[in-house]
Length: 85
Image (cartoon, rainbow, N blue to C red; front, top):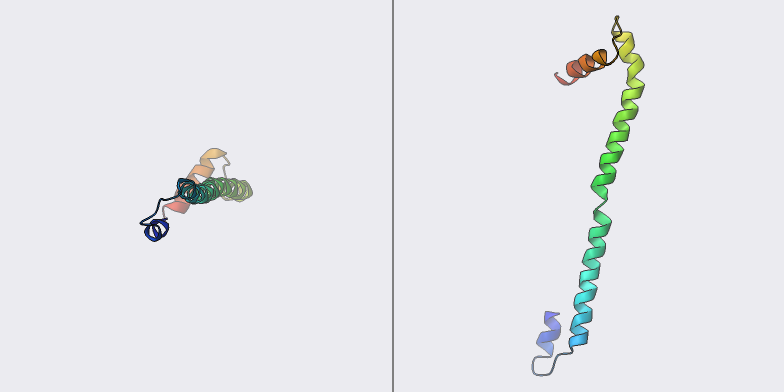
């Protein structure tokens, strides 16, 4: 846009042309934002689903480790021991 204004320094600038340039630039920025916006949401949902799946497949292993299967208490102790290392 600055190039257009520099080239037409002595003449009258076309408002509609400047308006079109600004709208095209704005639309391209809005399009880029709309494409990039849901990415963190989808990554978070994917991580949550992966955590649920891993947790469900890990439940039989946890119950085999704990001789006295106390349900969620065994899971909490197992997760604390695993991540405190």
